[in-house]
Image 1 (cartoon, rainbow, N blue to C red):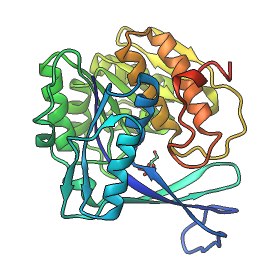
Image 2: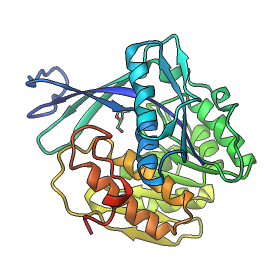
Image 3: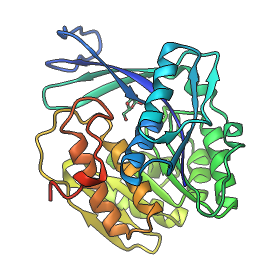
Image 4: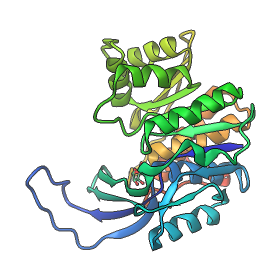
Length: 305
Ligand code: RIB
């Protein structure tokens, strides 16, 4: 069973000619409302590949209409939402601008997500078959507690270090690495995590190798159009290319990679195959607007090859 413990957001998205810098205002013709949140995105991506009944999600939403919709969307995608708890805080909301190249800038108002508790998982049977998927949009202490429980039950911990927090201490990263089996990062996150534990890496590949060695884990770096790299604890390096596409919206591409990677792990696929399928799935996602709309079902895998 894949168990995602993380955020659920409603994404308010505006297409803009240029993403505004500080002190700037740009006009967008309109906006769209999409389902989002890194946790929910990863749960949906995993369920589209693994199929209904294989993915469960824990997290928190508000007692509001956005919360109702976010829970309904999990169900519509075959994700078990019975561990989702209602909070007195409003459902998380993300304000997203997407430019003409499909690049985005995101501000997340965390709301209920920051009330998520490892206790929310108490009804979940965590065992050696559990693949716990974590990100950084809920309190890190709670995610760490869930990871420790999973590690002590000999389950597998997949941690996506996104978004990198403003303050990432050596202690936080050291603890996180100690309970993680697969660390998924982008180039910047790899460098930031390595720097936080005092490893001066010249590039993301070197940073990934240091993180893998230090944490005795596999570090996977997603590098956009350059594809993905995995470095194992013993230093082996595997790579997968990214299919060439014209992106419409890159929002949720990283989440698609993470969710599909977890689905591949749950099926016992090799690391190489998991990298390849996850890269293709992330590229397919970028062909549609919104974080989740373009996440592929299994039948679409292979269509870009
Ligand atoms: O990774 C994309 C996601 O980040 C969006 O869906 C938004 O909700 C933010 O959490």
